[in-house]
Length: 144
Image (cartoon, rainbow, N blue to C red; front, side):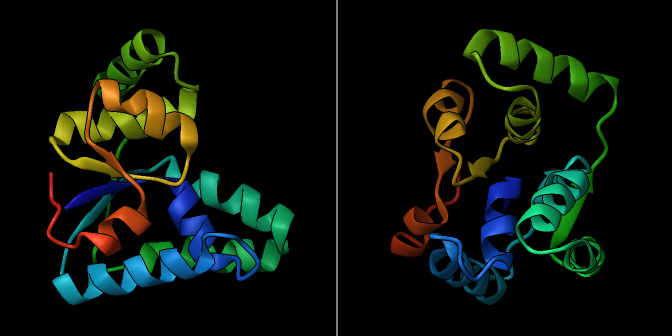
C-alpha cells in the first residue's frame, strides 16, 4: 500500500512527460500486485489543473472521472486533523502546502509516499519513506 502524489498520476496521463513510461510501468506493477493506493482528495484538483494546462479541459475532466473509477485508489478526506498535521510538516520540513498534505497522509497511514516531486523526495524523508515509481519498479518488494 502506498500514498501516491499527483505527479505520478499526471505523468501517467501525459504521453510527452519524461516520466510517462516509468509511471506506466509502476501502475502495471501496482495492478499485478493488487496494491491499494491512497491520496488526499486534494488529488482531484491537483490532477485537473495541470492536465488542463498540458492537454485540454476535456481531458482534465476525463482524468478526474477516471480517478473516481479506480478500484485500487482510496481518497482520504482533508479534514482538520490532516490539515493540522500537514501544516506541522510544512513548517518542520519546509514543504509547499499541497506537498505537505501528501506527506501527512503517508505519515498518518504509516505508508511510503510515491512521487516524482524532487522536494517531496528530499524533504519528505524527514517524516516518511519516499520512493519514485522507478525505484519501486526496480525493487518491487519494497513496501514501507
